[in-house]
Image (cartoon, rainbow, N blue to C red; front, top):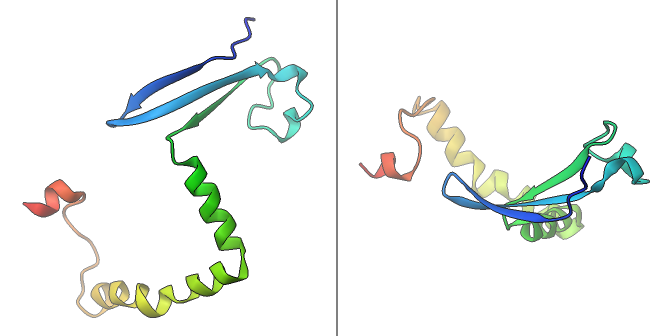
Length: 103
């Protein structure tokens, strides 16, 4: 089995994706914690370029300040959607996406 340690750039749904191919997972001491627990498999990590922002937001949401800020959602953001769904009986929408909603 050939070991790849290169990367590739691809486009999926008009968005760039990046794939990184790791070393032989059979020799990795962290193999049991990894997504590829099979024998001799190569780990492939894909990213869309926003991984740093996702990690930053996850760290923020674990902090006390982040948890307090998120609690405000139920007062400012969530209730209008609940009102629309429950009181105005809009349980489903026939269109999805900006293109269809604009027409």
